[in-house]
Length: 148
Picture 1 (spheres, one colour):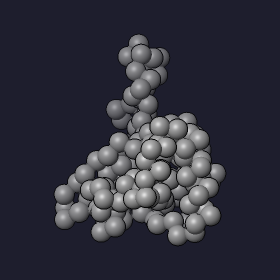
Picture 2 (cartoon, helix red, strand yellow):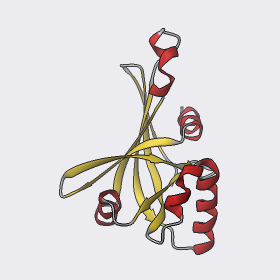
Picture 3 (cartoon, rainbow, N blue to C red):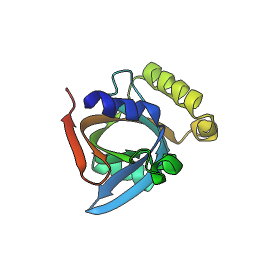
Picture 4 (spheres, helix red, strand yellow):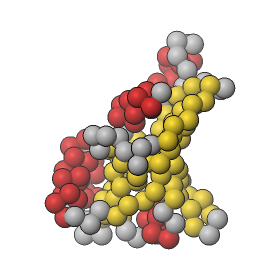
């Protein structure tokens, strides 16, 4: 099942990132890439955003990746919507070379992020995946812990 979960993470490139501060949740639609092991998700943001301030205060996050954009097939009954909930933890990327490589990869997959990347107040960060829960349809749920 973990293989199916990782396949979904790799196949998609947008997610909903949920952060919180002082018990106040905040959701953001984000573009992302993953590392080869699918143990980290990389995202770019401006530093002066609610999501980034929340991450710096409370590094625990939830991410939703789903297949609802494949709606025509699903409405006709050919497949079910998959919804993957990821629990993870914010990690700053300190190594400049690693940050440059991740930025290059992000821009390769998401060229529309170029204006964001060009800003001096932009930041690339990682979410280290801790656990995953895949919901297939309404009732079928599978849970997996990531190897640390």
